[in-house]
Length: 620
Image (tube, rainbow, N blue to C red; front, side):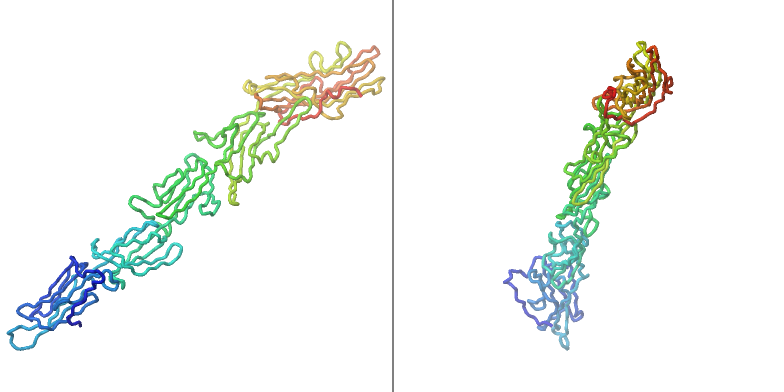
């Protein structure tokens, strides 16, 4: 029990113990009702006072004592008071903590009959206990953008004139955080430097934690970005992803991952995460999904941010195109149909593979070309040779070649790109429809004869020894020009007095028969040949054995074309001429094929040679 005394004001602190927000209650006691309870109505006033008075003619004696929690004092008899002292951490922030205090004394009634003074008491109470809490009780903030929390009593937003605060929790990196009580006031904002994590925030009336309340706070940052079906090429601070260019309108989803987890915070009309970079848009279904178009080659850096935290990724959309004469022939056209290039056998095909965007490192390249194709065909009166496509040609950025067979198929171009010692495969395909003329040949062989001058043995009587005509439709004829190529293996012998006296021979080699092409350039050529041997009077016998291989050849219009074989056939001229006693020459032996027709077969094998028959004209 405390006896009456006056409490010294702490004037050195510059603090007033009294405030306009004061509530005073008085309890009246008498012999009939010696005990009184006063009820305070406002739980957050800055000062409270409680008084005792006597009623019904009763009078207080000098006897007076009081008691109560820290913060109450008495500066007059029969009265006690309590004020908020905000700068003293050990004092109550306001009087709402301090009820039950009580005053006690004794009283008597003058002129009363007999007896001693009787005791009286006046005590304090609230109608209901204060209910403190923090508003809002649960919060989700973006990192670096914490919002104010308020310490509230009994659901009145402005009812808490002060407060002590502390927080504790675990960051997303696993670090524990804990602070001590700090005298902040009724409103508190967590530090903007606080890492993302889960925290418990506490508020109380004093540093002892009286009348405490707690709130749950999640601070969210961007932990990482997930890039759909793209291939991760590096683990740099800004990871690099490669993805192949897609079809028209195709998109890839980039998802932001929250730490320590969803949901993401919102700040007014701002929904997190916020996206920058690229030419895409945020998904209507989820703000943490960004839809990036990948139908064009490009190099994007996409960033998702939540407050002061952010994560970025570099997404490289790689396009691989096949071009012919500068025009893209792979993929689809604007109508969505696959591009098909029409061409003709023997027409030069010049293809280039192009990778976009620029700066992509190519580790390897490979062409896959179907059908029968060659790099070139060189043909003249001296030589006929095929230049094949080498493996090196097929591993270059560009390739030139000629098809020599009709086909309907795809040319594929594959590349391996590399970044940070990781590889990424791409391929592109170009469709081709390669046309070839459809032809036929009618070939007939004649008979050997001696000419009217009696000086030549000729293969052919009233017409040439070999005659033929091309069969072809008007449509196929318009594709280009047609001609022939003929090779021959020659073996001629002459005799004097039936003794061998000379030979002309290609020694088993097959050589070009005089000219290439054989028979000129025609749209619908005919072929005719009449080989002959000069019969000299010094000799009495000649034999001939000539084996021919003849090709129908075709060349598309244009300077960038080569001759292409279409059909071929073989034939021979075998005959013997002998002179009689009248010096008249007669054909005494003929080959079995004379007078017959010859069939031809389709072919795509080019004739080749390294010599001309004109090198074999001298008898030896």
